[in-house]
Each structure stands twice: as structure tokens, then as C-alpha cells.
Length: 110
Image (cartoon, rainbow, N blue to C red; front, side):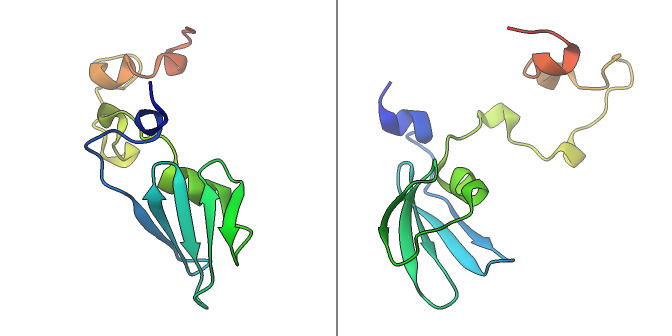
């Protein structure tokens, strides 16, 4: 598996997020590489794992780097938990399709 496939699928768009508390843009500029631009226009480039690569900014929010440049979740796992319907007929309450993707929730280990 090549490095790009580990971080982003071939059909996935580059990601861009705005951190409202820090007033900074986090923008994926290459697979696994995130450019951060703050409200003063200063920028820095980071690996999605956190290490600084270049630029005036040398610190960034690790959670935003992961969100913006880190591995994508499988498509079937990209949902908001508040939008997941409860299945009251199942002991776990999870619909079967999600329950099989979350074995740790059921006390199973792989």
C-alpha cells in the first residue's frame, strides 16, 4: 500500500477546515501534509502526525492536523452519532451494519 492510499483514498477531495477558537485555517495541501494559516496571515506546514515541516508558524493543533490530513474513516463509518437510528429490537441498540463495524462496543476483541 502506498503512502497516499493510507492517508486518503484516490477519489477523496483535499480537506479544509476552519478552527473557530484559534481563528486558523487548516488545509490539506498534499496527502498527509497540512498548511495552517492563522488570523494574521502567518502560515506553517505540518505532517498530519504533528511534526513541523516549514513556515513561520511552528505549532498547530494536533487534533485539527489529524482531522484535516490524517487517514479517512471508511465511508460506512462516516456518520454523526446523533443521526444513527436506534434499533430497539437489538440488545446493543446499534443497527446491525454499525454493530459489526464496532466490535469493541460489544466486548469482542480482534
